[in-house]
Image 1 (cartoon, rainbow over the protein chains, first blue to last red):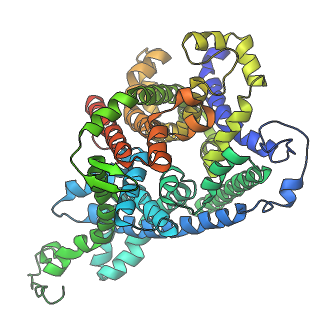
Image 2 (image 1 turned 180 degrees about the vertical axis):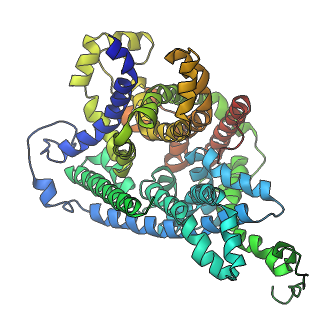
Image 3 (image 1 turned 180 degrees about the horizontal axis):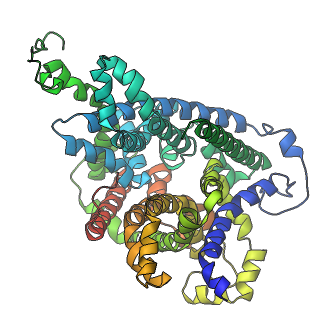
Length: 264
Length: 309
């Protein structure tokens, strides 16, 4: 009984973790299913068919590569624009700081559907054709704030004396930025970029409003929930999960090695 | 810009270099801000203006819409769709409370008890993100399927009796009930609760726990008087990051719910994309925005934390 009380937090915590992981387990298991009907919701029999032919469903891999392209460009755009804003906010005093801060904060404090609907209102009123470009514009817009937040946090925590020291040692402003500021800010920029990529790749609501007939991967999954869910969706979901976990684990191992290599 | 830039002021040696700022240097922050802020002005603020104008237009798709300052649309939209508004706030609120109750123990576990498992647990919290959330939400259809093991167990434990008494389920079903939608919302936004909680818990100096123990505080008192108050910034940003997106969500209600569980997001989505009644859709999303912003402002004031970004 005492043991139970002492470990109550652990039990509840692991319970929550199970709740969070369970759908991934289901997705993985059902990627080996051979469903009876059009929908892959009930277990029928074990099959490797979908894994042998992941692109076997029309438009599936096309939508996947479109989503990857949009995510890459949106990440680049949001990271460049957001990093510049973050540096301006932390390193300079200027008028309208408060206004700029609220403008950055507002997109994060608003339900996605409100931004999605208003962007559609803009595009409709302007007569802009919905498609790749409207999706990209929207994604850069909502990723921007997250990049600013991530980079700002990192730059704020960095010691301004390092830059002063560089200047005292006769480094020019460009050199100081490239050799001191940028390397220190890099983890923040990387975090912002990763977040942008994940947000853009998995975005549904804003894309749903502003894509027209263009089908990204989330749009494909959404459509298939109405028409019939091919097993290949689960294959791709599982593969992305495994790849991402591997990348994180490898990254951590490398990071730990580097940390251990450094003298304490 | 170079033409207007003043020549660099030749400062004395004793003057720190900051004061030597020329006009060109003073313009640097504006140049850094310009592209990003312009992007937000054109694709975030301007759309709001267009939507405001759309919401007071009348007309039809064939004849086109004209601004007629028809504010009646707001009133009509509110009277027709207030059940969906209330339902959205109720579902989002319930999901937020559940996220806090479920997420806090896990964040606490990772921050204080995990030891060398900490990184692995963090990876497991973030990892589901990498499988598209729509695929994972569809998996709940399988998990909560009628007559499936989860429903059977809940039924055997008489949990479903309680939830159906609360109006969350009907009979021996979970799928297509409010419970399924809340369960999906909770699931989808849990990481947004856990990560801020973890960040603020991890900052707490564990010596404070020892100090509380030394002063004869029981573990529950330590939690109530030390740990929880210090984790408030995480609680505030976690609840906001959960409640705001959940209130406008329509994916869970569409995939896991039924026509009786439609949230305001579903209404806006179908008005904009299927029924093509743009003024009503615009008015609805403005009302949603106003409700959320007012609630968030009050909440932040009460919780007393201003810096969230």
